[in-house]
Each structure stands twice: as structure tokens, then as C-alpha cells.
Length: 231
Image 1 (tube, rainbow, N blue to C red):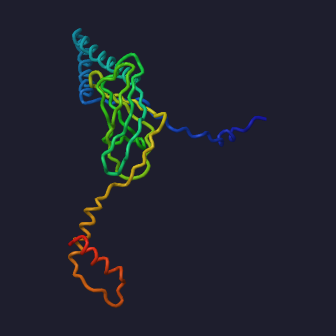
Image 2: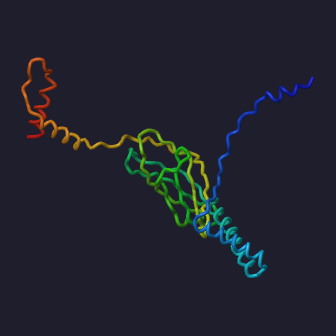
Image 3: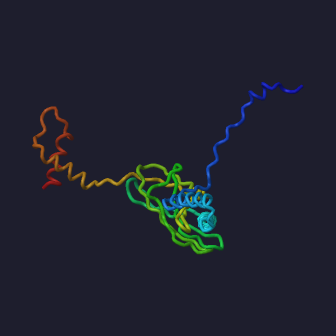
């Protein structure tokens, strides 16, 4: 017999994770001016019926289409692979090495590369390449400053371009085939400076001989430190 309708209502479908966009488009300041100008010219053209206004409106629309086509061709041409990283310490400037390659027969222009950690860009981790020739590779170094020690895994990167007119900034999300695992070491400590400060403070305290009930290590090492380091 067929299952009752309540059984179908009770069945739960697996939750689907929201798909992440591989492309993002953001208008720059010049792009917003262009959009406003396009709306104004288009409104004037339809209200007046002037051929020159329609011609200018068509030029504005064609510039947006050409910008989208050329920027997409630039982003499709580039691939990114991690190359490695040296010693990384917290609160110290370090560099991430990546290989930016152009696998197409057309050059890529004005490409900016950013590394991602927890879906956020490592500010100010970024590198800019004005032109990547067809079939060529570039080794780029991304400077960044980790805030704290621990393990850092970079599995994604972003390639951005505002080519050709700078009206729009298009972004491409790139998933690295081999994630870059980084162990951020603790920040360096100025041991010499800390020792000088400690000994200076100890030198201000009056010296006394160990008395009854005092622990030997609590008094003798202070006097010994004075004689050795403070002269």
C-alpha cells in the first residue's frame, strides 16, 4: 500500500550548505559614477529621443560589457600554487611564497593576489602583478604579520583585477590543491633587555646578610647577581 502523506512530511531532507560564490563583482568609485551617468543619459535619451544621447548611452553600456569580458578573461587565465614559507613568528613581519601562473594564450593584467585564513584575507597580505605573460609563471611574496602563535592553514586565495578601465573590481576564489600549513612560533623576547631591567631593579634593593629563617637561595643569588653583572 502507498505510504501516507504524513510519512513524507515527517521525512527530513539533508541540509545543504550554501554554495560559495567563485566570482564577486564590486563597483569602484569610478564605476558608481559610470552607473549614475548611464542612468542619467539613458533617462534623457528616452525622454528626448535625441540620437546623440542614444549613441552615448550605447557607448556607456558597451564599456561595461567590454570591462566584464576582459576582466573575466584575465581571471580565468591565472592559477595559484603555494611555494612554502620560512620561519614565522607572532607579531613579526613574514612573507608567504606563491607561484602565480598564466596557463592561457592571452596575457593577464593587473592581478592582485591575497591569501585567505578562515575565509578572511590576511591583511596586509597581498601582492600585485601588472602583467603575467602567456605561459609564464611568477614567484610572488605576500607580506603579512601574524597576531598570535599557533597553527595557520591557508587553503584558499583570492585573485582580483580591475582591468581594463577600473570601473569594477572582479574577484575569483581559488581553492589551493595543496593547503599551506604554517606553524607560527612565539614572538621573540628581548632577553638581554629583560635581564638588565631585572638586575637594575635588584640593584636598587639594599643588600643584607641571610638571617635566621631565610632560605639560602632567596638571598644569596641576589648578592651574587650584583657582583657578577653590576660590577
